[in-house]
Length: 256
Image 1: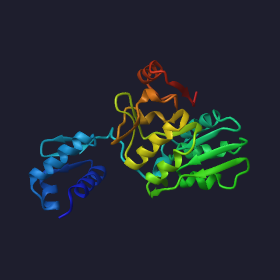
Image 2: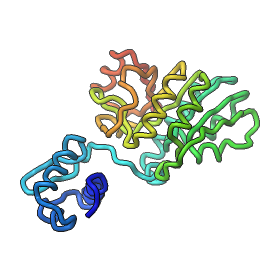
Image 3: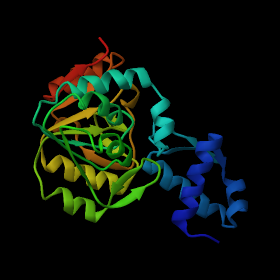
Image 4: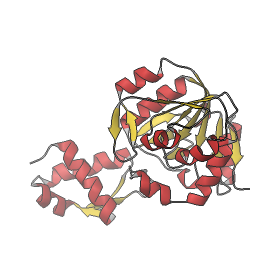
């Protein structure tokens, strides 16, 4: 027997691998009643990651699941590179900035090395590695616990650390962006740190390719209208473009 949280995590893993699960099969696998499994599937449906049906449930493909950073980096790489270059162009010499972890923000490290007098704080080990020892960049790395999937640091120590400072710009990686649900991420610790990043930054700039629109996950970082700029690609729908601009968000299309 395993606890409820672990059982539900394993059910999510099966959903991701197989696309669907059956109540009877899960009941036998975990040696629990079908009532217990139905409660699990009801919980997962309320969380947004599953859609229940007769005798089981299927994966909600619009839900954002945690994935390794190297997998994310292979998706839409050309588009992400264009977004990263457009984001780096917003950085002025002498700026103090935060680079959040993520496959798009990590691509900003190259063009940022052309800037002068930057102070860069990051919670991403891969970004820190790329910027360490570079001329004209003062690098600060947030302390905390490492989240292996994203090579990022988070936790109470990280939040306390970042709240000691004030920054000109935050470049926020986005897992899901939905007009109703806001900007979300699968990892609770990262969401809490991202909220602290927003609190200490004068300007919040989200970077997201158009595949992220309409997707949601467990933990909200910010309502969409609370960011200042969004850098994305031409795949953004007219509906999202109009809605974001109506909310006062400046939308920059990077690949036009």
